[in-house]
Amino acid sequence: MSADDVVGEPGGAGRRLGPEAYNSSGRLRKKFYEAELARLQVELVKLQEWVRARGLRVVVLFEGRDAAGKGGVINRITEVTNHRVARVVALGAPSDREKTQWYFQRYVEHLPAAGEIVLFDRSWYNRAGVERVMGFATEEQVEEFMRSAPQFENMLQRSGIVLVKYWFSVSDEEQERRFQARIETPTKRWKLSPMDLESRSRWEEYSHAKDEMLAYTDTKTSPWWVVDGEEKRHARLNCISHLLEQIPYEDLTHEVLELPPRPEKTGHYMRAPMDHQSFVPERY
Image 1 (cartoon, rainbow, N blue to C red):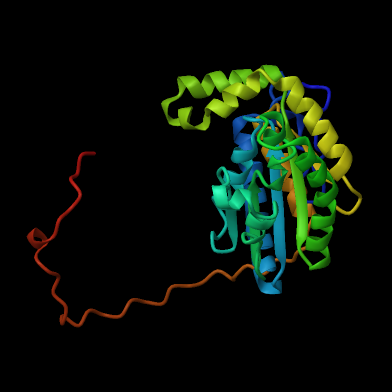
Image 2 (cartoon, rainbow, N blue to C red; image 1 turned 60 degrees about the horizontal axis):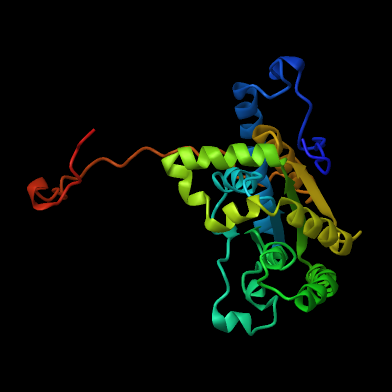
């Protein structure tokens, strides 16, 4: 565990499980993790319905080390929510035109309308992190960002947007282990980019950049919440539990519906011959 990692304390939406939920090394057992995740995901659906019904606008930023677990948490949120309500924004490198715009401009167009939740998988804080460390932004641009970001976020909040910022922290040893696992797993290799590999040799530079970013942008009105990403299961539950606590909500989910009896067939419909259609070959 790195020195800047903080262990989350599950609150109202979370709970401390009994000792039987943990193995001898203090990690959550799979069945307890899955049960608690399922419970929290039900709460996420309740939150979603509340946001939609009340016309709230919610922005959640996910930042942190490469392979620190941001994507895993985002996936656990979106696998149960309506993608028309909760959507993910993960922007690539800016185009030549976007490079000439006001820095925050391309992020503004992705902000939520009423009844929407936007999850930024990396955000405008690219400027304070990868752009700075990799030399894609000048020191003058970084300094201007540090001054502007708190003002920009204050504007968002004054407009009524709920803004929550998470920083995922992980030790260099655990990051190295996850990088290696990605290399060895064909379905995960796409997650490891040349930029990720370059970050391995710039751990301290990223650490200094992160510390300065927090010093400027961790404000009372828009604080950074640090998620200990060392143990994925713990990080996912702690983050989701904390997110649920940031927006007071009530249960507006629909009542269980009863399917009415199907009407009797009239015999007026005849299915087209099956040999007139192209079916996917049954190989399994």
